[in-house]
Image 1 (cartoon, one colour):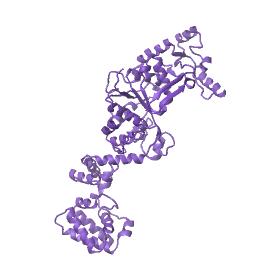
Image 2 (spheres, helix red, strand yellow):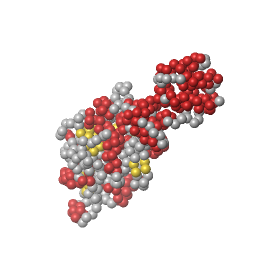
Image 3 (cartoon, helix red, strand yellow):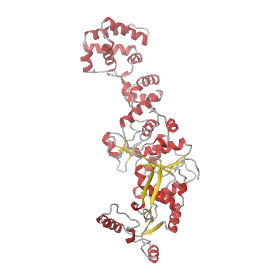
Image 4 (cartoon, helix red, strand yellow):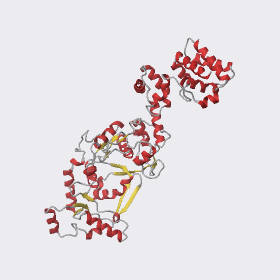
Length: 507
């Protein structure tokens, strides 16, 4: 086997890509890139009853938006084509026959009603885990309890059957998990899992093991909900003679709801008002579910946030580019405990990544929003405004919300600020300052600051007393970017006009 790191993300196209699955994708991708290995996308579409049209394309579009591009997959191709399980059925038939020939799998002819009756009897007998296993199968209809002639007759006659794994009785399955260490499971608690359904389609357990082996997967990184299934997968590797090629298992801690009660679900997302999916998902019922993309989250910020939900770099650094995450990532620093999903922290990461961006990126966005309001704005002006307000922005839409006052004069003023700050002295300062500005020939920080200071001193007040009023008069807001920068960018005419209007409104 190739000793390079090879990982896979193997979603089922049964709906949108949940945010928890996105973290799994990310950890797989980070490990592959860190180790110079392959990141494979494999579509596990054997459950045709749950197949949802459009889901496969949705998964690929989500990964594209996030910049997580598979090295191999349905679109990229690769040495292990095809990458859809529905197109690999002939491969699975070869390996199921090997298991049957070796006695590691067997035919079972029980109807769903007969299996349900068996489970009911076991429950009545106070059996904690009623299963189809090495004991209960003794009174069921299968290859071990029926005469060979009967088995052949039923198969030749087209009687429905499944193929089950022959789980050995009273053995200890032992495997190592990178996060949890050594795990031991007694086969007495395991079910004889169905490997091949009655329609000839393999189950997840069987197909995933075959594909992982053939695709030379070295690390299976997935959520901890798959931990109970791992003993079955270990058994399959052993039964097929592949024990030495078994991948390392990495079962990730759960993503918990914001209040820590249970696994994060779409219901929690709806309850706390954040998306559950990376990009918008149009459900078969024509319900539009908005994604993180449409809500204004940057892909790199979302990945940064998700990376730190279950992994820590061992340093004080919090804000990472994707490239920095790749360089810092290691499986050894994954945690064992579930992690609360804190959307406020996600917003903070988005804010930090917007701050890092060149303001020219947002100029077109600002101009577009201004145009919707019937306002003309030059690119240069938009860049200056975006540079000034970007530290106050959490989402791209906030650029216009924070900077619109440059074009839209205030038409009302905050009553609380007026009550606290408006008095004879502050009024006199603003009148004096307004008059001084009308005579200013060089419009720059130094001159404006000097005039303001002179007015404050002349009327015996303080900077803290006048600045909130000055901001309110010019912007209509009680908070905002640096006020001197704002005054310079507003320009002499707008500043003089707005101060005059403000003073008239208070007279």
